[in-house]
Image (cartoon, rainbow, N blue to C red; front, side):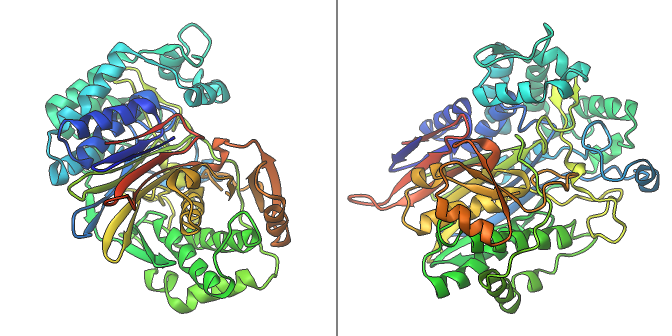
Length: 530
Protein backbone atom coordinates (compact mmCIF):
# COMPACT_ATOMS: atom_id res chain seq x y z
CA UNK A 1 0.00 0.00 0.00
CA UNK A 2 1.26 3.49 -0.83
CA UNK A 3 0.19 7.08 -0.24
CA UNK A 4 1.38 10.54 -1.26
CA UNK A 5 0.74 13.96 0.23
CA UNK A 6 2.23 17.44 0.22
CA UNK A 7 2.56 17.91 4.00
CA UNK A 8 3.05 14.66 5.92
CA UNK A 9 3.30 10.90 5.55
CA UNK A 10 3.50 7.85 7.80
CA UNK A 11 3.82 4.09 7.38
CA UNK A 12 3.55 1.30 9.96
CA UNK A 13 2.99 -2.48 9.82
CA UNK A 14 -0.55 -2.28 11.26
CA UNK A 15 -3.45 -0.20 9.96
CA UNK A 16 -4.64 0.80 13.44
CA UNK A 17 -1.24 2.26 14.24
CA UNK A 18 -1.07 4.14 10.94
CA UNK A 19 -4.54 5.55 11.54
CA UNK A 20 -3.56 6.74 15.02
CA UNK A 21 -0.47 8.49 13.63
CA UNK A 22 -2.42 10.05 10.78
CA UNK A 23 -5.00 11.49 13.18
CA UNK A 24 -2.21 13.17 15.15
CA UNK A 25 -0.77 14.71 12.00
CA UNK A 26 -4.17 15.85 10.75
CA UNK A 27 -4.80 17.65 14.04
CA UNK A 28 -1.53 19.56 14.18
CA UNK A 29 0.89 17.19 15.86
CA UNK A 30 4.33 16.65 14.42
CA UNK A 31 6.04 13.51 13.12
CA UNK A 32 7.37 12.57 16.57
CA UNK A 33 3.92 12.90 18.17
CA UNK A 34 2.53 10.72 15.39
CA UNK A 35 5.25 8.10 15.66
CA UNK A 36 4.67 7.83 19.41
CA UNK A 37 0.93 7.31 18.98
CA UNK A 38 1.60 4.59 16.41
CA UNK A 39 4.27 2.96 18.57
CA UNK A 40 1.95 2.77 21.57
CA UNK A 41 -0.90 1.30 19.52
CA UNK A 42 1.46 -1.32 18.11
CA UNK A 43 2.17 -2.64 21.62
CA UNK A 44 -1.55 -3.44 21.82
CA UNK A 45 -2.24 -4.82 18.33
CA UNK A 46 1.12 -6.52 17.63
CA UNK A 47 2.22 -8.03 20.99
CA UNK A 48 4.03 -10.74 19.03
CA UNK A 49 6.48 -8.11 17.81
CA UNK A 50 6.62 -5.29 20.36
CA UNK A 51 5.54 -4.44 23.86
CA UNK A 52 5.71 -1.95 26.71
CA UNK A 53 8.15 -4.58 28.00
CA UNK A 54 10.55 -4.25 25.05
CA UNK A 55 13.29 -1.94 23.78
CA UNK A 56 13.37 1.09 21.47
CA UNK A 57 15.92 2.73 19.19
CA UNK A 58 15.13 5.71 16.97
CA UNK A 59 16.55 8.38 14.71
CA UNK A 60 15.05 11.87 14.68
CA UNK A 61 15.99 14.39 12.03
CA UNK A 62 15.03 18.05 11.99
CA UNK A 63 14.97 20.82 9.40
CA UNK A 64 18.47 21.49 8.19
CA UNK A 65 19.38 17.81 8.18
CA UNK A 66 20.52 17.40 11.80
CA UNK A 67 19.99 13.84 13.11
CA UNK A 68 20.13 12.34 16.61
CA UNK A 69 20.25 8.69 17.62
CA UNK A 70 18.01 7.66 20.54
CA UNK A 71 19.21 4.46 22.22
CA UNK A 72 16.82 3.15 24.88
CA UNK A 73 18.06 -0.42 24.94
CA UNK A 74 18.12 -1.97 28.40
CA UNK A 75 20.87 -3.58 30.47
CA UNK A 76 21.28 -6.98 32.07
CA UNK A 77 20.65 -7.23 35.82
CA UNK A 78 23.69 -5.94 37.68
CA UNK A 79 23.79 -8.98 39.95
CA UNK A 80 23.52 -11.62 37.21
CA UNK A 81 25.63 -14.69 38.02
CA UNK A 82 27.34 -15.26 34.68
CA UNK A 83 29.42 -18.21 35.89
CA UNK A 84 26.38 -20.10 37.15
CA UNK A 85 24.36 -19.33 34.03
CA UNK A 86 27.21 -20.51 31.78
CA UNK A 87 27.52 -23.71 33.81
CA UNK A 88 23.86 -24.50 33.21
CA UNK A 89 23.52 -23.34 29.59
CA UNK A 90 25.65 -23.77 26.46
CA UNK A 91 24.10 -20.63 24.95
CA UNK A 92 21.90 -17.86 26.34
CA UNK A 93 18.36 -19.07 27.06
CA UNK A 94 15.60 -17.75 24.81
CA UNK A 95 12.51 -18.21 26.97
CA UNK A 96 11.85 -17.38 30.60
CA UNK A 97 13.23 -14.77 32.96
CA UNK A 98 16.97 -15.18 32.35
CA UNK A 99 17.16 -13.40 28.94
CA UNK A 100 15.03 -10.44 30.08
CA UNK A 101 16.92 -7.15 30.24
CA UNK A 102 15.50 -3.88 31.56
CA UNK A 103 12.73 -2.81 29.12
CA UNK A 104 13.57 0.53 27.51
CA UNK A 105 10.47 1.35 25.46
CA UNK A 106 8.76 3.62 28.00
CA UNK A 107 11.89 5.67 28.68
CA UNK A 108 12.47 5.94 24.94
CA UNK A 109 8.93 7.21 24.37
CA UNK A 110 9.39 9.79 27.12
CA UNK A 111 12.72 10.98 25.71
CA UNK A 112 11.24 11.41 22.24
CA UNK A 113 8.23 13.32 23.57
CA UNK A 114 10.35 15.57 25.77
CA UNK A 115 13.01 16.40 23.19
CA UNK A 116 11.03 16.66 19.94
CA UNK A 117 7.30 16.27 20.59
CA UNK A 118 4.72 19.04 20.70
CA UNK A 119 2.25 17.10 22.86
CA UNK A 120 2.61 15.29 26.20
CA UNK A 121 3.29 11.57 26.18
CA UNK A 122 -0.14 11.00 27.72
CA UNK A 123 -1.76 12.16 24.47
CA UNK A 124 0.17 9.57 22.51
CA UNK A 125 -0.89 6.79 24.88
CA UNK A 126 -4.63 7.54 24.77
CA UNK A 127 -5.45 5.66 21.52
CA UNK A 128 -3.48 2.63 22.72
CA UNK A 129 -5.26 2.59 26.06
CA UNK A 130 -8.64 2.68 24.31
CA UNK A 131 -7.62 -0.13 21.95
CA UNK A 132 -6.49 -2.33 24.83
CA UNK A 133 -9.63 -1.60 26.86
CA UNK A 134 -12.23 -1.86 24.09
CA UNK A 135 -10.53 -4.61 22.12
CA UNK A 136 -9.14 -4.96 18.60
CA UNK A 137 -9.56 -7.53 15.88
CA UNK A 138 -6.69 -10.01 15.72
CA UNK A 139 -4.69 -9.23 12.56
CA UNK A 140 -3.63 -12.05 10.21
CA UNK A 141 0.03 -11.62 11.13
CA UNK A 142 -0.68 -11.87 14.84
CA UNK A 143 -2.95 -14.89 14.25
CA UNK A 144 -0.19 -16.68 12.33
CA UNK A 145 2.29 -16.13 15.14
CA UNK A 146 -0.22 -17.15 17.80
CA UNK A 147 -0.69 -20.45 16.00
CA UNK A 148 3.01 -20.98 15.25
CA UNK A 149 4.01 -20.19 18.84
CA UNK A 150 1.02 -21.78 20.56
CA UNK A 151 3.06 -24.42 22.37
CA UNK A 152 5.29 -21.73 23.94
CA UNK A 153 2.34 -19.49 24.77
CA UNK A 154 0.18 -22.00 26.60
CA UNK A 155 3.04 -22.82 29.00
CA UNK A 156 2.86 -19.32 30.49
CA UNK A 157 -0.23 -18.49 32.60
CA UNK A 158 -0.10 -14.82 31.63
CA UNK A 159 0.04 -15.41 27.89
CA UNK A 160 -2.48 -18.21 28.06
CA UNK A 161 -4.94 -16.02 29.93
CA UNK A 162 -4.83 -13.27 27.31
CA UNK A 163 -4.45 -15.18 24.06
CA UNK A 164 -5.95 -18.63 24.76
CA UNK A 165 -8.39 -18.22 27.64
CA UNK A 166 -10.74 -20.86 26.19
CA UNK A 167 -7.94 -23.30 25.48
CA UNK A 168 -7.40 -22.30 21.85
CA UNK A 169 -5.30 -19.38 20.65
CA UNK A 170 -7.20 -16.49 19.10
CA UNK A 171 -7.69 -16.63 15.34
CA UNK A 172 -7.77 -13.80 12.83
CA UNK A 173 -10.75 -11.50 13.28
CA UNK A 174 -11.42 -12.51 16.91
CA UNK A 175 -11.48 -9.69 19.45
CA UNK A 176 -8.39 -9.25 21.60
CA UNK A 177 -9.09 -7.38 24.85
CA UNK A 178 -6.29 -6.50 27.27
CA UNK A 179 -7.80 -4.72 30.30
CA UNK A 180 -4.67 -5.09 32.44
CA UNK A 181 -2.55 -3.54 29.71
CA UNK A 182 -5.10 -0.72 29.37
CA UNK A 183 -4.71 -0.02 33.10
CA UNK A 184 -0.92 0.00 32.72
CA UNK A 185 -1.08 2.44 29.81
CA UNK A 186 -3.36 4.69 31.88
CA UNK A 187 -0.83 4.64 34.71
CA UNK A 188 2.00 5.50 32.32
CA UNK A 189 -0.07 8.37 30.93
CA UNK A 190 -0.67 9.71 34.43
CA UNK A 191 2.72 9.09 36.02
CA UNK A 192 5.07 9.01 33.06
CA UNK A 193 8.14 6.76 33.01
CA UNK A 194 8.33 6.84 36.82
CA UNK A 195 5.59 4.19 36.85
CA UNK A 196 7.98 1.82 35.08
CA UNK A 197 11.33 2.83 36.53
CA UNK A 198 10.68 2.88 40.27
CA UNK A 199 6.90 2.66 40.38
CA UNK A 200 4.14 0.07 40.52
CA UNK A 201 4.55 -1.22 36.97
CA UNK A 202 8.25 -1.88 37.32
CA UNK A 203 7.82 -3.47 40.76
CA UNK A 204 5.32 -5.94 39.35
CA UNK A 205 7.67 -6.94 36.52
CA UNK A 206 10.62 -7.34 38.90
CA UNK A 207 8.52 -9.51 41.21
CA UNK A 208 7.57 -11.80 38.32
CA UNK A 209 11.17 -12.06 37.10
CA UNK A 210 12.62 -12.66 40.56
CA UNK A 211 10.12 -15.45 41.12
CA UNK A 212 11.48 -17.19 38.03
CA UNK A 213 15.16 -16.97 38.83
CA UNK A 214 16.21 -13.59 37.46
CA UNK A 215 18.62 -11.35 39.36
CA UNK A 216 16.65 -8.29 38.22
CA UNK A 217 15.95 -5.67 40.89
CA UNK A 218 13.96 -2.47 41.18
CA UNK A 219 17.31 -0.67 41.27
CA UNK A 220 18.12 -2.09 37.83
CA UNK A 221 14.90 -0.57 36.50
CA UNK A 222 15.47 2.74 38.27
CA UNK A 223 18.98 2.95 36.82
CA UNK A 224 17.87 2.76 33.18
CA UNK A 225 19.08 5.64 31.02
CA UNK A 226 18.45 6.79 27.45
CA UNK A 227 21.45 7.81 25.38
CA UNK A 228 21.26 10.55 22.74
CA UNK A 229 24.16 10.63 20.30
CA UNK A 230 25.26 11.34 16.76
CA UNK A 231 25.11 8.98 13.80
CA UNK A 232 27.30 7.24 11.24
CA UNK A 233 26.73 7.29 7.50
CA UNK A 234 27.55 5.70 4.16
CA UNK A 235 26.87 6.92 0.63
CA UNK A 236 25.41 4.77 -2.14
CA UNK A 237 24.95 6.27 -5.59
CA UNK A 238 24.93 9.82 -4.24
CA UNK A 239 22.45 9.12 -1.43
CA UNK A 240 23.60 9.20 2.19
CA UNK A 241 22.22 6.61 4.60
CA UNK A 242 22.38 7.26 8.35
CA UNK A 243 22.14 4.87 11.28
CA UNK A 244 23.27 4.54 14.88
CA UNK A 245 26.38 2.98 16.35
CA UNK A 246 27.03 1.71 19.84
CA UNK A 247 25.44 -1.69 20.44
CA UNK A 248 23.18 -1.35 17.37
CA UNK A 249 23.93 -3.36 14.24
CA UNK A 250 23.23 -0.28 12.11
CA UNK A 251 26.97 0.22 11.66
CA UNK A 252 27.18 -3.07 9.75
CA UNK A 253 24.41 -2.08 7.35
CA UNK A 254 26.49 0.98 6.53
CA UNK A 255 29.60 -1.14 6.11
CA UNK A 256 27.84 -3.37 3.58
CA UNK A 257 26.37 -0.43 1.72
CA UNK A 258 29.78 1.22 1.49
CA UNK A 259 31.23 -1.98 0.04
CA UNK A 260 28.39 -2.20 -2.49
CA UNK A 261 29.13 1.36 -3.60
CA UNK A 262 32.56 0.06 -4.65
CA UNK A 263 30.88 -2.85 -6.43
CA UNK A 264 28.65 -0.36 -8.24
CA UNK A 265 31.69 1.60 -9.39
CA UNK A 266 33.02 -1.56 -11.07
CA UNK A 267 29.86 -3.34 -12.26
CA UNK A 268 27.33 -0.53 -12.62
CA UNK A 269 23.94 -0.47 -10.83
CA UNK A 270 23.70 -3.41 -8.42
CA UNK A 271 20.74 -5.77 -8.91
CA UNK A 272 20.06 -7.66 -5.66
CA UNK A 273 17.90 -10.33 -7.31
CA UNK A 274 19.71 -10.62 -10.66
CA UNK A 275 23.29 -11.04 -11.79
CA UNK A 276 24.67 -9.30 -8.68
CA UNK A 277 22.73 -11.33 -6.11
CA UNK A 278 25.72 -13.51 -5.22
CA UNK A 279 27.99 -10.52 -4.73
CA UNK A 280 25.38 -8.84 -2.52
CA UNK A 281 25.01 -12.05 -0.46
CA UNK A 282 28.78 -12.26 -0.01
CA UNK A 283 29.02 -8.63 1.13
CA UNK A 284 26.14 -9.05 3.57
CA UNK A 285 27.62 -12.30 4.90
CA UNK A 286 30.93 -10.60 5.63
CA UNK A 287 29.20 -7.66 7.30
CA UNK A 288 27.19 -10.09 9.47
CA UNK A 289 30.40 -11.84 10.51
CA UNK A 290 31.91 -8.49 11.53
CA UNK A 291 28.77 -7.66 13.51
CA UNK A 292 29.00 -10.93 15.41
CA UNK A 293 32.72 -10.35 15.98
CA UNK A 294 32.63 -6.72 17.14
CA UNK A 295 29.15 -5.42 18.03
CA UNK A 296 28.68 -4.95 21.78
CA UNK A 297 27.99 -2.38 24.47
CA UNK A 298 30.64 0.30 23.79
CA UNK A 299 30.93 1.00 27.51
CA UNK A 300 32.54 -2.44 27.77
CA UNK A 301 34.23 -2.84 24.39
CA UNK A 302 34.13 -0.07 21.83
CA UNK A 303 33.42 -1.22 18.28
CA UNK A 304 36.35 -0.47 15.94
CA UNK A 305 34.34 2.04 13.90
CA UNK A 306 37.40 3.39 12.13
CA UNK A 307 38.30 -0.13 10.98
CA UNK A 308 34.81 -1.34 10.12
CA UNK A 309 34.07 1.68 7.90
CA UNK A 310 37.62 2.34 6.68
CA UNK A 311 38.13 2.61 2.93
CA UNK A 312 40.81 -0.09 2.87
CA UNK A 313 38.80 -2.59 4.91
CA UNK A 314 35.58 -2.02 2.97
CA UNK A 315 37.47 -2.30 -0.33
CA UNK A 316 38.77 -5.69 0.73
CA UNK A 317 35.20 -6.84 1.45
CA UNK A 318 34.05 -5.65 -2.00
CA UNK A 319 36.99 -7.26 -3.81
CA UNK A 320 36.51 -10.58 -2.03
CA UNK A 321 32.82 -10.56 -2.88
CA UNK A 322 33.55 -9.88 -6.55
CA UNK A 323 36.35 -12.45 -6.75
CA UNK A 324 34.00 -15.34 -7.45
CA UNK A 325 35.50 -17.45 -4.65
CA UNK A 326 32.64 -19.18 -2.77
CA UNK A 327 31.93 -17.78 0.67
CA UNK A 328 32.18 -19.38 4.11
CA UNK A 329 28.70 -18.58 5.37
CA UNK A 330 27.75 -17.86 8.96
CA UNK A 331 24.96 -19.74 10.77
CA UNK A 332 21.45 -18.64 9.91
CA UNK A 333 17.80 -19.40 10.65
CA UNK A 334 14.40 -18.05 9.70
CA UNK A 335 13.06 -14.75 10.97
CA UNK A 336 10.27 -14.66 13.51
CA UNK A 337 7.99 -11.77 14.40
CA UNK A 338 10.19 -9.58 16.52
CA UNK A 339 10.16 -5.91 15.58
CA UNK A 340 8.00 -3.06 14.33
CA UNK A 341 9.08 0.03 12.43
CA UNK A 342 7.28 3.36 12.39
CA UNK A 343 8.41 5.96 9.86
CA UNK A 344 6.99 9.47 9.58
CA UNK A 345 7.73 12.93 8.19
CA UNK A 346 5.95 16.27 8.49
CA UNK A 347 5.78 19.67 6.82
CA UNK A 348 8.24 21.20 9.30
CA UNK A 349 11.04 18.90 8.13
CA UNK A 350 10.96 16.45 11.05
CA UNK A 351 11.74 12.86 10.09
CA UNK A 352 11.44 9.83 12.37
CA UNK A 353 12.50 6.22 12.13
CA UNK A 354 11.35 4.48 15.32
CA UNK A 355 12.02 0.79 15.92
CA UNK A 356 10.74 -1.17 18.92
CA UNK A 357 10.76 -4.85 19.64
CA UNK A 358 10.38 -7.85 21.94
CA UNK A 359 13.17 -9.61 19.95
CA UNK A 360 11.92 -13.19 19.41
CA UNK A 361 8.26 -13.71 18.65
CA UNK A 362 6.41 -12.91 21.92
CA UNK A 363 9.80 -12.19 23.46
CA UNK A 364 10.64 -14.33 26.47
CA UNK A 365 7.18 -15.98 26.33
CA UNK A 366 6.31 -14.27 29.62
CA UNK A 367 3.32 -12.00 30.25
CA UNK A 368 2.92 -10.37 33.64
CA UNK A 369 -0.73 -10.97 34.60
CA UNK A 370 -0.82 -7.90 36.84
CA UNK A 371 0.26 -5.41 34.16
CA UNK A 372 -0.58 -7.21 30.90
CA UNK A 373 2.99 -6.62 29.69
CA UNK A 374 4.80 -9.10 27.45
CA UNK A 375 8.50 -9.18 28.38
CA UNK A 376 11.18 -9.15 25.73
CA UNK A 377 14.14 -11.55 25.62
CA UNK A 378 16.73 -9.12 24.31
CA UNK A 379 19.38 -10.68 26.56
CA UNK A 380 19.31 -13.72 24.29
CA UNK A 381 21.61 -11.67 22.05
CA UNK A 382 24.39 -11.97 24.61
CA UNK A 383 26.95 -14.71 24.19
CA UNK A 384 28.49 -16.82 26.94
CA UNK A 385 31.81 -16.98 25.09
CA UNK A 386 34.36 -15.37 27.45
CA UNK A 387 36.42 -14.14 24.48
CA UNK A 388 33.55 -12.18 22.91
CA UNK A 389 33.07 -8.44 23.52
CA UNK A 390 29.35 -9.26 23.67
CA UNK A 391 29.69 -11.67 26.58
CA UNK A 392 26.96 -11.37 29.22
CA UNK A 393 27.83 -9.14 32.17
CA UNK A 394 25.86 -7.34 34.85
CA UNK A 395 24.71 -3.86 33.83
CA UNK A 396 25.68 -4.42 30.19
CA UNK A 397 23.64 -3.80 27.04
CA UNK A 398 23.57 -6.65 24.49
CA UNK A 399 24.28 -6.54 20.80
CA UNK A 400 21.11 -5.02 19.40
CA UNK A 401 19.42 -5.87 16.11
CA UNK A 402 17.28 -2.70 16.11
CA UNK A 403 18.61 -0.18 13.58
CA UNK A 404 16.63 2.90 12.51
CA UNK A 405 17.64 4.56 9.24
CA UNK A 406 17.27 8.08 7.84
CA UNK A 407 18.35 9.28 4.40
CA UNK A 408 19.92 12.53 3.20
CA UNK A 409 20.70 14.01 -0.17
CA UNK A 410 22.87 17.13 -0.47
CA UNK A 411 22.65 17.52 3.31
CA UNK A 412 18.85 17.56 3.37
CA UNK A 413 16.71 14.77 4.81
CA UNK A 414 14.70 12.93 2.18
CA UNK A 415 13.78 9.60 3.74
CA UNK A 416 12.92 7.51 6.78
CA UNK A 417 13.29 3.73 6.56
CA UNK A 418 12.47 0.97 9.03
CA UNK A 419 12.51 -2.80 8.89
CA UNK A 420 11.52 -5.92 10.80
CA UNK A 421 13.88 -8.85 10.38
CA UNK A 422 15.95 -9.50 13.48
CA UNK A 423 19.57 -10.04 12.58
CA UNK A 424 18.61 -9.69 8.89
CA UNK A 425 17.51 -6.06 9.25
CA UNK A 426 20.69 -4.81 7.50
CA UNK A 427 19.83 -7.05 4.58
CA UNK A 428 16.26 -5.81 4.30
CA UNK A 429 17.55 -2.23 4.39
CA UNK A 430 20.10 -3.08 1.71
CA UNK A 431 17.43 -4.50 -0.59
CA UNK A 432 15.37 -1.33 -0.12
CA UNK A 433 18.35 0.96 -0.78
CA UNK A 434 19.41 -0.90 -3.92
CA UNK A 435 15.86 -0.96 -5.27
CA UNK A 436 15.38 2.76 -4.69
CA UNK A 437 18.74 3.52 -6.31
CA UNK A 438 17.59 1.50 -9.30
CA UNK A 439 14.63 3.83 -9.76
CA UNK A 440 11.93 1.90 -7.91
CA UNK A 441 9.14 3.81 -6.18
CA UNK A 442 8.73 3.31 -2.41
CA UNK A 443 5.85 0.94 -3.08
CA UNK A 444 7.82 -1.10 -5.60
CA UNK A 445 10.85 -1.21 -3.32
CA UNK A 446 8.92 -2.61 -0.35
CA UNK A 447 6.93 -5.15 -2.37
CA UNK A 448 9.70 -6.43 -4.65
CA UNK A 449 10.84 -10.08 -4.29
CA UNK A 450 13.49 -10.52 -1.60
CA UNK A 451 15.87 -13.02 -0.14
CA UNK A 452 17.72 -13.02 3.16
CA UNK A 453 20.78 -14.80 4.40
CA UNK A 454 19.85 -14.78 7.89
CA UNK A 455 21.03 -15.93 11.97
CA UNK A 456 17.85 -13.90 12.43
CA UNK A 457 17.46 -15.01 16.01
CA UNK A 458 20.08 -15.26 18.75
CA UNK A 459 20.96 -18.63 20.18
CA UNK A 460 20.64 -20.46 16.85
CA UNK A 461 23.61 -21.50 14.74
CA UNK A 462 22.04 -24.13 12.47
CA UNK A 463 21.49 -23.69 8.76
CA UNK A 464 24.85 -22.13 7.88
CA UNK A 465 24.83 -20.69 4.39
CA UNK A 466 21.09 -21.00 3.78
CA UNK A 467 19.41 -18.19 1.87
CA UNK A 468 15.64 -17.97 2.16
CA UNK A 469 14.42 -16.69 -1.21
CA UNK A 470 10.84 -15.87 -2.11
CA UNK A 471 9.65 -17.96 -5.03
CA UNK A 472 9.42 -14.95 -7.34
CA UNK A 473 13.12 -14.13 -7.04
CA UNK A 474 14.30 -14.55 -10.67
CA UNK A 475 16.23 -17.70 -11.59
CA UNK A 476 19.42 -15.78 -12.54
CA UNK A 477 19.51 -14.32 -9.05
CA UNK A 478 19.08 -17.73 -7.43
CA UNK A 479 21.90 -19.16 -9.56
CA UNK A 480 24.17 -16.24 -8.68
CA UNK A 481 23.59 -16.80 -4.96
CA UNK A 482 24.33 -20.51 -5.32
CA UNK A 483 27.56 -19.82 -7.25
CA UNK A 484 28.65 -17.61 -4.35
CA UNK A 485 28.58 -20.65 -2.06
CA UNK A 486 25.15 -20.45 -0.49
CA UNK A 487 22.24 -22.89 -0.44
CA UNK A 488 18.93 -21.42 -1.57
CA UNK A 489 15.66 -22.53 -0.01
CA UNK A 490 12.48 -21.28 -1.67
CA UNK A 491 9.70 -19.80 0.46
CA UNK A 492 6.33 -18.36 -0.51
CA UNK A 493 6.10 -14.90 -2.03
CA UNK A 494 5.27 -12.06 0.36
CA UNK A 495 6.27 -14.12 3.37
CA UNK A 496 7.45 -12.31 6.50
CA UNK A 497 10.34 -14.76 6.64
CA UNK A 498 12.23 -12.12 4.63
CA UNK A 499 11.27 -9.33 7.01
CA UNK A 500 9.18 -6.31 6.15
CA UNK A 501 10.01 -2.68 5.57
CA UNK A 502 8.34 0.70 5.89
CA UNK A 503 9.35 3.77 3.88
CA UNK A 504 8.71 7.49 3.71
CA UNK A 505 10.57 9.34 0.94
CA UNK A 506 10.48 12.80 -0.56
CA UNK A 507 9.43 12.50 -4.20
CA UNK A 508 9.33 14.96 -7.10
CA UNK A 509 5.86 16.43 -7.66
CA UNK A 510 4.29 18.43 -10.45
CA UNK A 511 4.78 21.77 -8.70
CA UNK A 512 6.88 20.85 -5.66
CA UNK A 513 8.14 17.72 -3.92
CA UNK A 514 5.64 15.47 -2.15
CA UNK A 515 6.02 12.87 0.58
CA UNK A 516 5.46 9.27 -0.45
CA UNK A 517 4.93 6.44 2.03
CA UNK A 518 4.83 2.70 1.51
CA UNK A 519 4.15 -0.28 3.74
CA UNK A 520 5.29 -3.82 3.07
CA UNK A 521 2.64 -6.27 1.84
CA UNK A 522 4.20 -8.87 4.13
CA UNK A 523 2.72 -7.06 7.15
CA UNK A 524 -0.79 -5.85 8.07
CA UNK A 525 -0.04 -2.17 7.72
CA UNK A 526 -0.93 0.90 5.75
CA UNK A 527 0.63 4.10 4.49
CA UNK A 528 -1.19 7.40 4.99
CA UNK A 529 -0.31 10.88 3.72
CA UNK A 530 -1.90 14.29 3.74
